[in-house]
Length: 147
Image 1 (cartoon, rainbow, N blue to C red):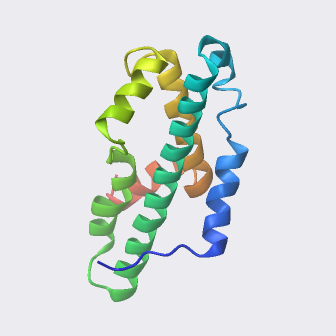
Image 2: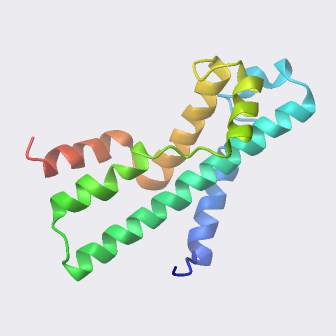
């Protein structure tokens, strides 16, 4: 298995986005701060930060695979779009089952609970900030599919 190393610039970019969207005081999560004890709130914030990092790092890896595939000319653009670009949206960045269950329980007991939805929205904001907007990527996919 190859070693994967992010450059200091890539690491800084990820850290900057996570810092800018800090769940501890971000407006999307601020309304829920007082509904949890401080230890539980700290867990929620750590969970959201870790999920943002996983999404951003995986997105960078997918981007690297796409760049390598393009450079090697081993796959065509449609294959790249179908197999790699969508992977970032479709992959479930779940943590260990106990961590996921703890988060969902603290956030309201189900994935549709307002705190769960707000946390996922914050993760999506990080993804959009790192890689461009969903609408831009969606348009790119449609253009590549001949739609």
